[in-house]
Length: 603
Image (cartoon, rainbow, N blue to C red; front, side, top):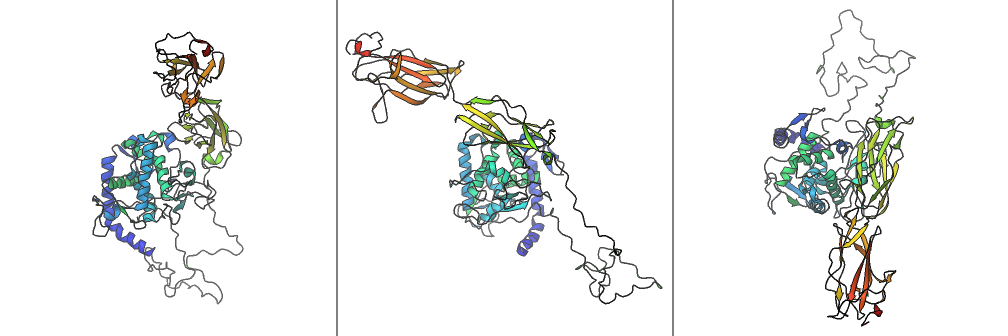
């Protein structure tokens, strides 16, 4: 600690001007229209997030962060660049190998999952630098898990946000308050829904840099933000930690890393020094000594010269009786300490009770009129979930954060692809969840509403996802389907499915070569499809129309049986179409349809 304190003193004088210049230059180039916020900081007028975007306390609970700024000089590293003291800026541009790999893998994963987000791995590196100094300089094992947990201060409202325990201490070891955890500093309540498995080990561990980096990427890409857009980039960073100083610090590292970085061995990364809470911490005041120090004559503060910072006491005037000496065995009283009359009751110091917040008054949640929730796979539910926060007497509570979570094995999500949304209750105590979009998995889905920051029973809503359906099937062509015995039909059958006149995409379908118009059992002779092994198959299941409602069947073949045969295509929802197929020797006239192909000539 002494060495770190010395570094801080030496660094402070040398970097104050650099830090101020960097933030000023960054603010001027990145943040036009800056206004002063209620905390005396700066906030950009053109990037105010929507209420639902700032309703929660961010990924970190607005925990403290490192405020060190990068060198003003561009790093310009080369693959073999030295990281010694002679390479200006190169040590700051070095990122531990495993940590750097985690950032780049997270970027690649988001490029596939959310290509419109345009997440740069340098943004994850900038946040990782500010949150944990790149996992404390890359002190991680081969799997990317930190060698020891990285836990921020408890969020007890003493200079920080007040977030009471939400995980029973499972992540942070604190069963009273929450702490930010891991190299990307997620609070447990955020990790519970934002956590991802980034290294494929089947676990979601906030202390693993692969898991934490991928989770941070998904967190930054929610709400459909495009991080190549300056406004969306600012919103995303502020949603991680709602501080303009934090925004500017992250942006400065983002620009620095964009100019060049290089890999350094794990455990050798440069450690940051200055933290945002360095000057905000409440330090204990030294206690006054029980007795005057020998020779002081005045009971001055230890280590402080008598008379320093206070007015000296006037000398005793002539004739004023001096204070009688203390009799042996009687404890002396420091000068200026008021005496308590004998028998007077002592009054213990009282701790002020913090004011109750609206959240503290919530007793339960009520359904605020949400009707039955049903939608076809892929569609948006017409009804939106509404929950009302109430006191024990049924009074509505406004300004309370309600978290809606889609739970269970389902791909149903809220608009934007997220499974969690947090909304603040309005003046009527009602929070309305974002629109819910049905996934492809059919069946029942549960959405649970809970009060953020208060342990009250959750309120479950049941939503049902039904399969996609079609009510009409038609052929896309009208060519006659004819084949010689033992041959292959020249044309493939293609159909179009619609529902209420619109294309019915991704609708399940079945194709069967039926016995007759009145007998839908599969025929045992005549035309057939082939399976992967080339064997004859007369029923195809698992078919599905494309996004435009089109379905093109595999090629059809004929055995040696001649005649007219029937192919029936059916879909979910009851749409059906019967198509005639003719098997006849080349050059013959097509025979009339018959229920029994064997009755036709040449059978």
